[in-house]
Image 1 (spheres, rainbow over the protein chains, first blue to last red):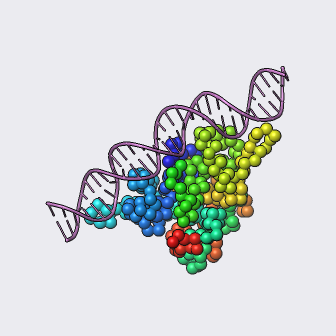
Image 2: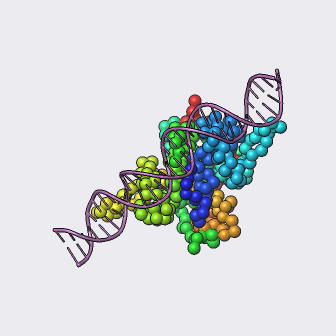
Image 3: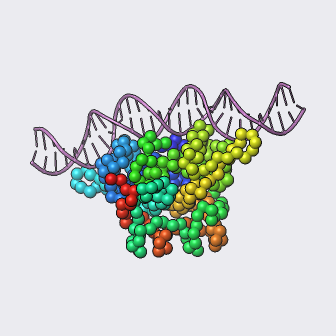
Length: 150
Length: 150
DNA sequence: CACGCAGAGTTCCCTAAGGGAACCCCGACA
DNA sequence: TGTCGGGGTTCCCTTAGGGAACTCTGCGTG
């Protein structure tokens, strides 16, 4: 809902928040991902206000993470993930993985992920794109990059 | 800022949002991560309202992702990441990675990550914890887990 | 011993964003 | 010609964020 616009900061986290920082945006993306692709479906599934849903969908379309396209000769539309959007869903999987580990409690995780390639129930793991070793928050140094401010 | 409380949904994404869904929360965590650990530092760095910062810090402490501890005999406190919090920072790296790829533009990414293990500038890559192969949003099936609703 | 200062919050008011419900528009179909 | 259903608008109300001023607490200094 932010009043302060994060997009202007020289910070990639802030820029991502500018796209999906709205409270509902990640859940909308999840819905589109799992197959709730129409306005009514998303609205009913999330219980979100129609007004806010309209705004959020518009914003996500503007940002190029989903596409709005007609599925009928009547004015009916569905929303589909773009490639940019699919990669945001990767982020959602990491989110889910964190909550599965830290917040699921007795009941266990609400959703399981089966990896196509190996057929096993699994979870995502963060690895270094260069050497393939584990790469977590404690395993890196931060250096100013070319787009750094000042 | 959400009015609707996500924590009750049987959805790990919603549960994560309940912890860091507030507009500023991810940036506060980032600040704590990179070494802005005191109230004044964070407030100055982010330009966030002191009121909201107080609330957000309190919430993050409650959720167990950061710890508040005195660093002086005067009433002075600093905030440090817990293990639970450190793993949330993993999520922030994925966020940053997405924006580095899709939003950095001409200037390039504002921050680079050097992996301790191999010493190279790198980025995080999502792999299957089971087989080690790439694991992205398109590479998985979703199945109801033990904690699924209904 | 009074003063000042700095960190860490409160308090108060204002505005804008979310929630909710009702309303609208358009093309099919009966 | 009426009505149905998807996909939005509009309007009003409430509440959370922004901003600035105020407070409280202990040290450190003259």
